[in-house]
Length: 401
Image (cartoon, rainbow, N blue to C red; front, side):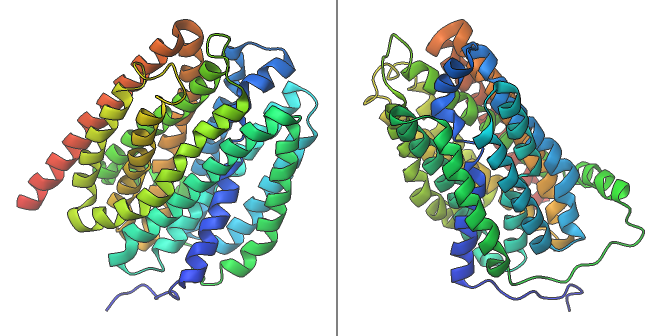
């Protein structure tokens, strides 16, 4: 008999409502992607320097997740989500009111620090679904993340082309108010939790690293996703600069339209999640990492017209999120009481990668143009493939033993 109490199973309506909440709270970090050139011009700074805004946001996300997300293993996930979503709402208000780079950067950085709800919710859900549906529900929530990113980038690009870019942040603030009010009603299935014996906060944080040392497979998954997310941020920040450059001559609305390609991942990711449930997370990740290299290899030769860019971006947006889903599956099937802390290490690594990608993407484009960016992305994709092959090989050797 299991020694863990069984929480109430999530209804399908709750799964979809949580997915929409994840979409809204995730979108906040991505409004800047298509408008980064506009923001740089408005604040009169260089393309290389503006990369510090998303970079600090990503680093603050990593720090916030490290210091705050482990609380989800000992305190109510529902209460933590409500508190930190409310804090996000206040940060979005600060970004909307900002009339200078310093305040805008500060609000964006604080926003990153308190954005833990998108990573608490999957751990919350993983304890409330049957093991056979773990990949499907994890993929559904990942599709919510993708939908939020999609709406943020497409919407921001369209609005900025026809109005002041600050309006985007006022609209985001309004959406956050609605989520803050709705979340207490959506997260009803709460598993009673209690503090671990002798569990001080310092010991709790230290246990994240102890668990990481014990779960080598999870560390590899975290490194793979760090590289994967670095590629994602570098691609879209550099692409926004590339398309709006004098040589290309497109507007921010075109950047937004192109970002709409991410819609394919909203439909493909849940299906690929079910496929990964059948063949195994590590083997599925190895296969999609091969496909990802094919997409990345086409970015440079097809990268000088918006229509030809559709081909590599379709491939990348279809398989990239599946690398994240399969990575999470490698540890979300472990004991419920350690999942949030394992998620903590994984997501911290992911956003450290995102921060590096934010700086590397803009700096590489500033120094080497689109060609330099494409070389950076290809190197990342090869690293992901090598690590995915190693993880699959190690797992299969362990199973045989």
